Image (tube, rainbow, N blue to C red; front, side):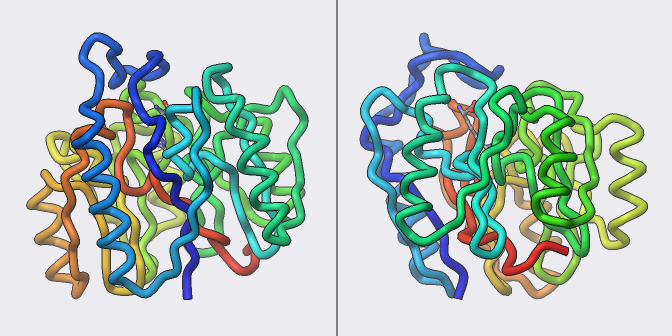
Length: 269
Ligand code: ARG
């Protein structure tokens, strides 16, 4: 059974602006955010997975986005090196928590930015890694060596889709949901070469973060606002669970950002 890491939104809020979605002036509704997060937890709890919770920490409002804790493969955990100082304080909490659960912690060099599963997703044999806005391409090479697997680095070009998991979602049947315009031409080519079954989403649905989905077997938990994608997935035999995520979209996140797989794969490659 898949294990997922979530972090309750006790200290969640828009307290700084590190991506184009975030506006301190607009803020997030605390009570609504709590209800939406609880809705995500409840939806996932019904599915074939086990949920683990890490204690939220004061002054780390984005700690809810556990996809950025790091990358877990087998019993190995590579913690994130956050690009922005606002989130850097999260890393030791996540690393300690994973270590207490028996993971072997492999730190990247300090100056190699890497934002975890948010920028690193396995599809088929390859680990696709996004770079530019948050993770550095040099971290990808280090990760390929640490894990001994094929890494395909893809450049992200639209600041609204600053993490890979905002525009790329591998499914258990080998297909990948993606928003091509978020990648440069070379990245699009690399993805097309490696993945034969691509499900393209349209800009209006991509803007609702429909690629930010959590696939669990034949179930997919995704933000509401993407009826075309939900239809396409239903036709393929998936059951879609569409959830309101407005208060997390205000921070530039949704279902997948709020979730980390422990581990994402049992083995690399
Ligand atoms: N406000 C957070 C940030 O900018 C959102 C992180 C979303 N996480 C993700 N995996 N896409 O870092």
